[in-house]
Image (tube, rainbow over all chains, first blue to last red):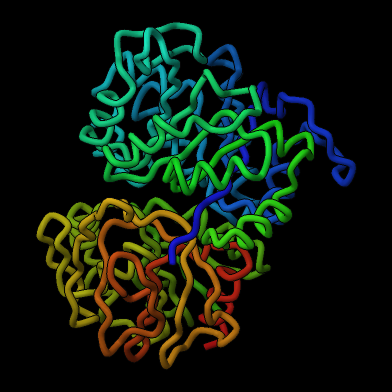
Length: 250
Length: 194
């Protein structure tokens, strides 16, 4: 049976992981390759590397980093950040990335999803959506969650699927950083609305939250950052726990 | 041993190369017919869309070259699908090594398409290392080859399908050994040992 996926997310700035990482058994926690390899060895099912470098000039170093990641890591990984065109994606996939994620650029230019999907196949296009509830409506935000838009979560996710996204990565900004659990209601609604896989993001604080994301939210995968980076939840422990709760886990 | 990866517009050539590097295996990437024909073993990778990829192979006469190879060849993902007769992906006539058709998965409420993630293998008269029984491999695909007499591993998603196949000197896997952690390395080793 297909297993639920556990996905650590690493933010990269100028080639280094950004958030403080609390690992004793790692030489250089700022090295995305070493940290990614550790997660892979611990049983992570996929990895996400988000480039949050401020300038295009700095981003050029990212393709070189992607190649280094692909050389050393034997599980699939997604890369994102600053992708606005087919020309941006080709070098990342050629360097060995399996998927790319788009967020703000897709909201500003939805046709981008069609173009990427046609050029590279739906399976490697992840539409990342940051949402927050405003006046009881889940509203899409861009620029790292800073700018509210006119778009509504559910119609945008559906449109993304129709334009050729292969997967939706939904982050609830209302839940992100709270450690109070994933946003179950919008997840389960996205699940019933979509025919493509769904990744839950934002709010993971304990192992039980992952059960909720999979069982109640019906997510196909769950993504988290700080709880893994700070060692609050160790991936092998999480997977053992989930298996014990009869969740299909590798 | 002279190992060749066929160079064409497949999306995963870099990843397959890195996987072989990690195993410490020497290989060469080429579309030179003579070099391919003289190889001991050949890997036929594949990520992309069936019709454009078949057209690319035909334009370079790689289609005829591949079907006439006598040494062990390993098709990966789209590579395996192209080794069949026909694919529902844009009604594509394929290489015809395996007398099977490639079908589109139809999603259900709980089973989304693409089939994306780690799923387990059930071996069936397999060239794959027996240690791979019930191990997880990484899949990403929307089309599948139904279970048939050439199936050498079965995986279940929406329906049981061929995770691996074998006929004569032709071997193939639907999943991505280059991205399937230790299990994937064992798959590549199984092929390299043949």
